Length: 148
Image (cartoon, rainbow, N blue to C red):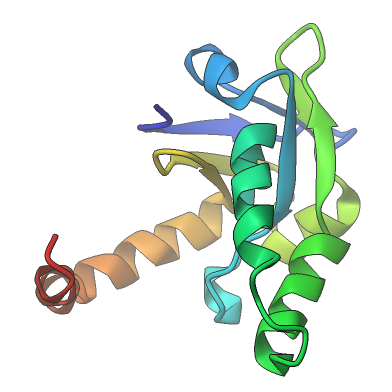
């Protein structure tokens, strides 16, 4: 299970260390793509195992081609997805396009989300934490409405 959070630096070549405790769940090759959180101040990357990607793909294949909003979202997800292989030091190479999208220059925060990870710039993660604290009461009420 992908839980906890870790802070790491992205090296000059764009490589990011993946924690050893996550490598078995993510596998030797993982998919990294744009996060689907919307607002520009909440940009991050999603990383997942090939098995999780396949499950996501299965769900996406059920969306009607005439659903313009969904197709636009899928287009951005697939056009920016890349398969990232772990090197011998446990690092993945994240494309410059994805790092630019997420604002990741040097500091990165990896956040476990159960079956996937989120990769944030240190600055955007701090802003996300602050925003979450300000919305905490509403968030818990929303989750209760979902039966969680």
